[in-house]
Length: 543
Image 1 (cartoon, one colour):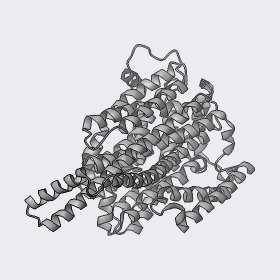
Image 2 (image 1 turned 180 degrees about the vertical axis):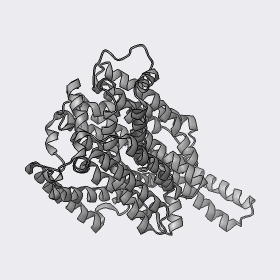
Image 3 (image 1 turned 30 degrees about the vertical axis):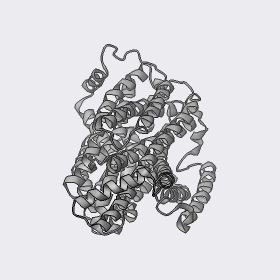
Image 4 (image 1 turned 30 degrees about the horizontal axis):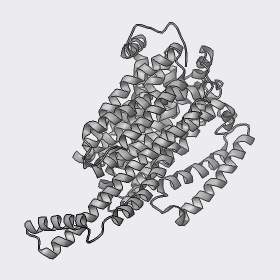
């Protein structure tokens, strides 16, 4: 970002953060807390329900496959609304749109928690996603306005903390709630924070001059573009989220929606390039840095959401940890990330090339995946903690430097659209990661099970010895001989299934590692350029 020599040089990373806070008046500090809290609240809700799906399914009397719509509906709403946030800010005014989004998110949370059937829960979860999707991009713009030019690298680091903490603490918080309270509190917990954020936003966030007297009659609404955007993003998200559950193209629904996605995507590109007032200005992708950066951000989304998806499943289904313990093991890594983020902001402000940090971060993410790929059912907590701390370094080294590199060569007028696009593709990358990994686990589990069963043959000494030992153990507990043998065979089948599942998880971590390795050459194509003060000043006004 900015190479400003007036930045203090004799302080540690956290002293830098303290320096900034001391220079920001109380009003601005409240604004910072408000927008960061709103962003974290939105991101937490992308993952908090994952650990509570079983509880919801049992309580509502539906299957796990059906209750997965609670996740799918929120993701679809998020991805649909994010690229439109720039337009809605111009049309309604940033402060108004931010406050309405918080209100919608909070009210929807109330109805989600009180839902008595799946249909109601899914409907209000979608509405919650509509409100939450706006908070991420809008919060980022408001935060940048709260800092002076020379302080914005650290502002980026602060916002990056929210990006990482949300998905990280979602499963932690969800696990604590599910193990100790009713699942509805995963939604009710948003209420006090939403109300507080709404009150603070109204009192402390100021409207910019162009928000006071908005001439909406002069703002052209690209209704066709909005319809086509929804027409390809929503079906795509459905296909990615539900493909595995519905057996991909063996399902008529998946096949039809894939066709709709392709058609609407093609028409959307044509429309947005042809109209003068597009809802999403695709011309920004002529910028090489943004195009390359967006691809790399998709990889980050793939890795972040994919590993957030895999880790809890591995910890609970393979090692037998509770939901609470699974979440708690994430905390040291998140704390380490908090320590690294200010250091990254300092390095960028000192002129360290962002692409160098991104390259190092990708290497660290590869190391994390390979560490996870070497675990087994006997893995103890410190193994997970160490690996997750490495992931924390990787996330700190990639998120903010990559966003800075992506938008560094955009004009001030293009910057808000560039930010919205990067946020959208991070979400799409996450959806792709979960879909690809879920399918990969399903296929690899079947293959590993076949391979393992092929080595279990009746009459072999090891097989007979294992079955005999389990049978005798059950007989010793009072089970009759016939039932004991059947239970022994069932237990052996369970052991094989668990081993096959474990091997598939390990393979999946290796797959994610491969994605990062293959992406490394793309980082070298990023143009090295600093963002000058005038550009950043104009960019802040454009948010």
